[in-house]
Length: 104
Length: 132
Image (cartoon, rainbow over all chains, first blue to last red; front, side, top):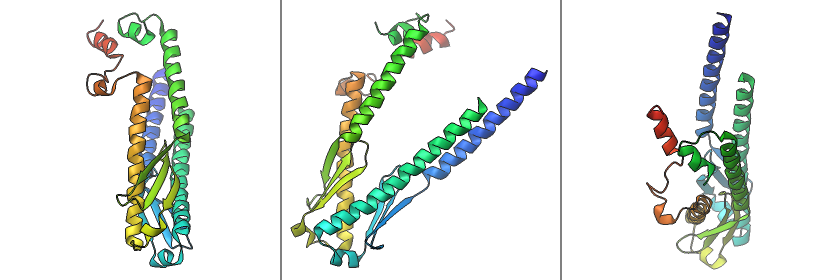
């Protein structure tokens, strides 16, 4: 009987961990990540996978920067947003890995 | 004969061999993904004012704007052109990725659809379902 109870407790822990993991993944997948350049004049937003969702260029940045400056600032904003998305994904995978390790 | 084919054919004794084979596939895939990160795929907006370069894993690595073409774009149109250039580069990346996967699985493009993408363990699963 003791064995059954232990198995039951393990199963319940497993289900609880799976539910937590599901909630974490859901929260992560709805998240957006932003990167800013030229003192806030350029804002890039990506989804959780790092794909660009929005890019806003202020009229001021458009006037103030030349083609090279604009390309560099836009690249910087998008790269920052992409890196934030990648860091969030790595943190999520790390936490899921740690959670699965505690059950075994 | 590959282990996975032997396994699917009902010879299930060589599990170690099967694991070694799948291990090899995982290493090959990891290697291919590592090489993709080093690759550069390019795309441009329809007017070719903005050019974007992405890595094989989709990260933006380079952006250039043609100064002459830029004169005709306001801040909203420029943002739109940047997004279009990145989308075009991502399309090129998708095609490259398809090619890499086809090379890894040894499938010709025209058989990669429904039947060509058949699960190699399909035979084994059918045997199990039949209770054998």
